[in-house]
Length: 203
Image 1 (cartoon, rainbow, N blue to C red):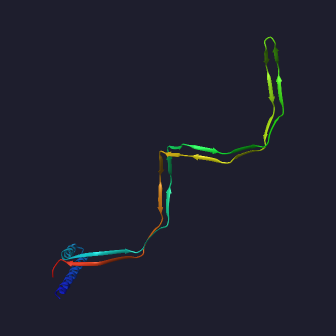
Image 2 (cartoon, helix red, strand yellow):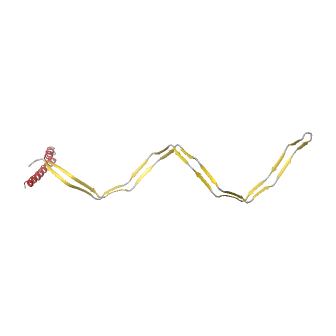
């Protein structure tokens, strides 16, 4: 009984203390003065302590909707200073090649041979031909059909090296536009499990 009476007295004292504090704040707000504010703060600091042990905040569902996003890049520069391509060994193998020519025609329409002067001296054998002309006016070569068959060709490249020494990428201007953003929070729960209120004064 004694402990219950002491607890009830503490609760009554705390209630009276809070009543005095709120009354002081109301009077101070009405009279527009700070004396009652200081008096209320003195009551609160000297009389009681308020402790909260556990607070839980639960958010069940949060939705973030972005309708339209625009990304604009006005200018992009890519510079490659030096590119080296090295091929060490290349093998080309052709196993079988067939060349077939079915018909070849060679037509020579006119041939002229002119010898203007020929001298033959018997003292000392001298043969002088001063001028010889050979004229072929028209020559025709006709190949009607040519077939080239390659049965198998193999190309082998053993090692290829590509070296790029320096690459520069420059982006001058980038624009990002977000037209509409929606944030929806469906349910928020705030739970305070235990509050301790301990007055400093004795009744």
